[in-house]
Image (cartoon, rainbow, N blue to C red):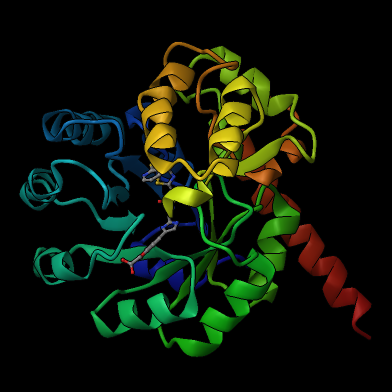
Length: 313
Ligand code: TUI
């Protein structure tokens, strides 16, 4: 009932993709998602190319199912990262925070499916023309580096503009979000924030706690003056970043932000760390295993779709 074009394209059971999150998306989480029938994605953000090679190997030891790697286009050693990917090709490459166009032919030559994450119709069109197999249309509800449009308006416009499958991201936490995304014309969902609080995620427990206790208005967008707006959980750091934004001081903002994601995810500093997470954190109620999360969402989505089907008469 939940099989879509994206399942056929990637060889997965359910149209649920785990977002590539720097410092978060590592082998145990990635393999758990792929083993549960979704698509796990390793994030290269926060890793050296050598560490990425180790993480790909570790993931292969934990699953024989397809998984992906997220290419962060702002990575300081992007060409080394691309070479690691080409030397040990995953099933899928997603790409964020920039245009991966120049790398797409090399990935495709290795049989890798390419799915850039895009925040606008114009960029989605460009990605289709450059040979992308699918795109993730990511709304501004997402955590981390974001665009301006909401998922609700971005997804249908991207679906209308493209002929390749579209995956929806941003604010999708549960079965209601999955069914809504399918209703908007998406072939699947990418979720980050829900998986932040998965038991297999190897981040500091303080961060999972923070996500589980978040309320609807607990995130804020900082860094607009740098041209790279980033959604984070409100804390002492975000207030200081907001102040620098208001003073229009991108250099001070970049300096203060450096190393803060590691401080959050590894050290568990929820006051001065950058706790990147989406607006949907308010809907995450507990730490659960990946299998529980995926079972709950897929069973719940089927129920909602039956209910909607019955209601149509
Ligand atoms: O990439 C993300 N989310 C992220 S990346 C990240 S680490 C970071 N890197 C740089 C600055 C700030 C944080 C934390 N979260 N999501 C996918 C995404 N991609 N959102 C927006 C974009 C995007 C933006 C501009 C994609 C393409 C793009 O192209 C501009 C152009 O035309 O080159």
